[in-house]
Amino acid sequence: MQFQQLNAFKAVYELGTVTAAADFIHITQPAVSRLIVSLERNVGFQLFQRVKGRLLPTDKGQAFYLEVSKAYSAIESLSDCAQDIKNSHHGSLHIAAFPMLSANFLPKILAKFLKEHLDISTSLKTYRSEEVQRRTALQSCDIGFALLPEVTEGVTRIAIECNCVCILPPNSPLAHLSVITPELLAEQSLISCEKDDTQQLVDSAFRKKKVKQKEVVEVSLASAIATLVGEGIGASIVDPFSAQYAVDVHPGVTIKPFKPNIPFRFFILLPSLRTRSEVVDNFISLFFLQAEQAGIVLTRS
Image (cartoon, rainbow, N blue to C red):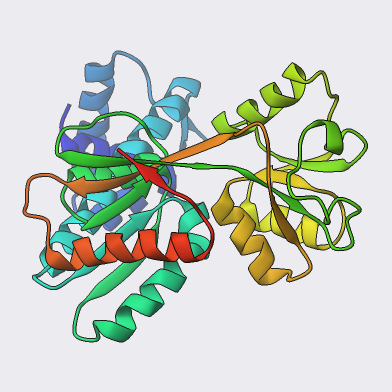
């Protein structure tokens, strides 16, 4: 299977005719037709059927196009990584992070960092944890923050753990308490996060205490939890970074320790095929310092 065949197939699929595809990829119409025929021979099934002068994809052709699109997206991502690598230089700080950290906590740290390091090239880009890990393995960022526990070649990881907390809405009757437990939340409306590992631990803590949760809404983003709690819809058990964000945007929200302890784990990822710079070490140190000043107790291994 050749790249030219896939290129011709993708062009015909998206443009609908051999003529348009030939113009788009700058080859002749017969050449496009030959490439499609040879690709069909390679894959073993028909990709298109001709209907009233147009080429319409078969069911198998549609399924194959989805996989071809994924391959092209991967190639485009490699181009982005190549550009990242090209632009990297001594004194740079290129950060890739999962959405929850990159939305609020990391930008505040980066702002403080840049006030003391005005002459370095920096970037902060948001990706899913899988992509953070992949880019770190490609050595295309200086530091990554991800939720994934897997060990990947080319990556050194620092495991970080902290405890989840309870965030209470303004004027909550529980705001005067020093610690919140499942029993205290039995009659309180609760906002839950989608069923990730942390939320499953929260659910388990309530089950062990035989407390039924009064869940009013389930959301995916920390920003949504912050808004809902801030608007008085209910309380929530979240990681301390999301809790800090909730307080920043809604000062009436209260953060309280939650018992039993619900661990929240994430990882600092470092590219292992090149020397760790002093800039990266300084940023990591600032990350821990800022967490401490925000009342977030982090342990690392």
